[in-house]
Image (cartoon, rainbow, N blue to C red; front, side, top):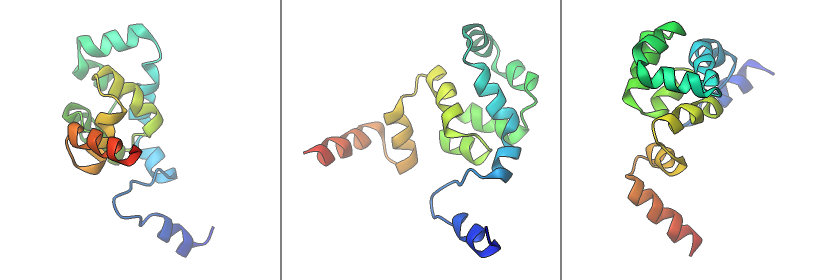
Length: 119
C-alpha cells in the first residue's frame, strides 16, 4: 500500500480507523475485553474495575475511557469494536446506546431515526 493511500484511509471524518498502530496502542484494552468471555472475569471486573484495569496494564487514557462508559472514547484509546461490545454489555449498553453515542444524539432520538428509516 502506498503512503498516500494509507494517509487517505486514515482521514475519514468522524471515523476511528482501526489499523496496526491503533491495534498496538489498544492491545491491553482489547486483551482485557477478551477476558470477559469468562463469567468469572466479568464478575471480577464488576467487583473492582480499577484493580481489574490495572491487572491488564491499561494506560491512564484507556482507564479514563472505560470509566466514561463512552464507547467512542474507548475506540480512540485503541479498543476494537468487537471486543468493546463485550465491555458495553457489562455496562448494560446495547447497540442502540452505542449508535446514539456514535451519532451524538440521545438513545430515544436514535430509536426514532431507526423507526423513520424503516417507514
